[in-house]
Image 1 (tube, helix red, strand yellow):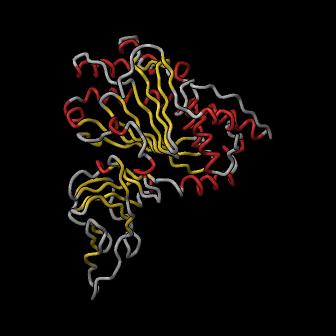
Image 2: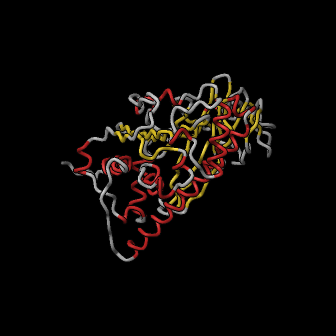
Image 3: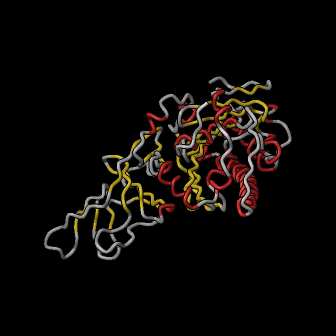
Length: 377
């Protein structure tokens, strides 16, 4: 794609038929436990099941325990590549490893059962014969280094995604992952992520960074993207966090403007891949209940930036946290308003704005389709 210019433009390839057949979701779908269970079965168990990026374990012997699995799973890198293994010993179900690091083998601290980096049991002290008790191993598929454990093939789902080159992790390193527990429904999070109507009202810092009137939507069967242009050459007054990020980026590039303000993309139902100047972010939602969602946020930076330009890393994360906090407040307002209606036995839906809310229209149509609730025109 070409870099956006500074002229006002709002482009979208949303199928016009969606406007005729798609209505906002009923309020009950955000609270009903039975509906939530159907979503888990029809949307998430059949989904791609993202588990992490191969950059979490870049070197032979590296391991990374996934805290959002209650530490029950870990990534390892062996001569055969990256594996997703159980982190629970086959002997008496003790937890094996913690955090991340590098090891030649995986050794249980309780009874010294020892596994190789592919999960094969190498030895069990005092046993006459080594039991056939390898660690459970999950088959993985790969797109741009992102690893998926589900039945779906992400490469097939994203075969027609036109921005793959912008999400090239070559030369990037994994910085860290954060885990946020959010008191609202997973769909509320995605609705805010997938609409641009709220940007100027909710994000005073971000809206001085990106040009909310200069954007482009793109849609596929199971994905969408939103490209945001740069506002006034990034030289308008921004919040302190976004001002530091802007200044750090421009100092690093010698004043050269970034290709975009940002690019936000999603692979349904829950994997968001985000481009920022000198940064890539992967954000994954795990629904826990109708009113509780876990969000795992992974930060990646070019190796040179991560090692030698820490001011960019720190400024980017501060700016990201600012917008994330504002989005969380917006989602909480949605949750509270809808819950008030739901408890009163009421429902209400307003009209969609197109193109500002085209991403939300596409999301609602996809959910209705996958749940068997979509109308035909």
